[in-house]
Image (cartoon, rainbow, N blue to C red; front, side):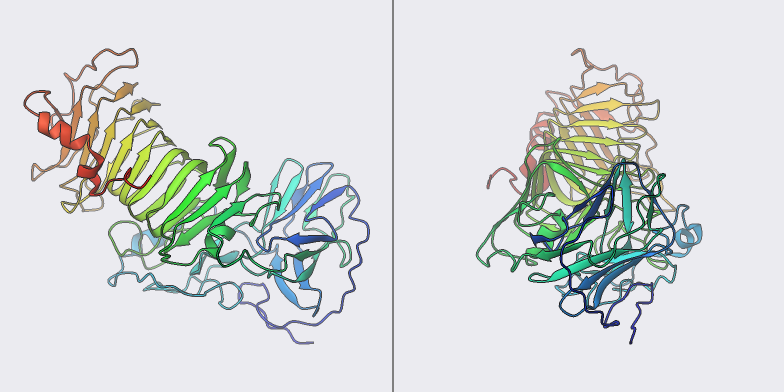
Length: 512
């Protein structure tokens, strides 16, 4: 018997061989399994779901193991003794980290949990030696902290390490006593013959360019991440990922994807979410994230599209389930579009770095609800924020954020339109935010927050701001470093900033 143990507690390579003859027997009493015991043609990206007759609780002991039935080898295991992640921020990490001296390189790799130890540092990062659950997502070897089991009501969902199951394989799942408990005490785990299933023979055909995601296994993939992993990096061809209505609790991260349309069946029916934030998945111990091009990738968003170009999102809800510095969506790249998308976050609900166009979207946040370098053009969007709506950090290399016919709904006295203070000794002298024909609801009379404008180059402007009942907004007490655009004298500015091509440098409607 030989064991090769992963440094965080799960098995990476050859383990003891246990021959299992898995003929479907009865499922554990009082539990419905997904995939069902004996199921065939299962997508390899599936989660494992147990539905009880009563609410289960997650234990802090025991193992979940998945074995290849043909060899008896353990292909994945989850040790419940290892915590998912921290609950308090690492203040020393925040104080000591610096921005990477070498721009981060985005390269195509085949890094997965099968061939690489999660937590293997990339770029200028050093290894994080804290003891938490780790899984590689989207070929990011530094890995993400994650919850091996999540419980909602009577349902427990097991999250295997990404990409460990293969096509054309049969597996058995065993769950130790104590991993999940119920008040009645009926559930005592699963034995080697109680939960077996087989995956599909092969992946979608090589010429397929439209992928269907459905959490019930009726599509090409069960998860959004599974579909995005299938698409080649930097593809020159157009792809579509269609997501059927469903609840998709998964941490999504992908990079280097181009020309992909991610379209949901309906905005409120497709909900992609995960409990993630800067505390749970912080930046490396020595490297900060998010500030300038080439910075180390951030891992704190529920859904991150990193170094991606020409993406199109439509009819989705993307949400983080934690408070703090917690984006629902973080998007970095250029020429990316969103239509009819609902983004829910906390601090920094949406972070957008690189040109992005949003139309008919809803953004809900708890302060600095839009963060990033820009440029961003927002048309017919509704924004709700507790605290400032945005902290724009563009340089003179591009425009900032422009809003045309949008609605701003403040939740408290701090819900100013934007702010631009000094940030740990750094200022943003070219910060730009322009509102044209927008409706302002419960916005302080000052309109704008702290503005550090030593050079006189900050450009915070409004034109024709209205109250919800259509009356002109009282701008007599506006921050003196902001300004109002005149319909006659500033007609060219108003015309230019109403044009997404002027703001973004490309026409987002040209190819739609």
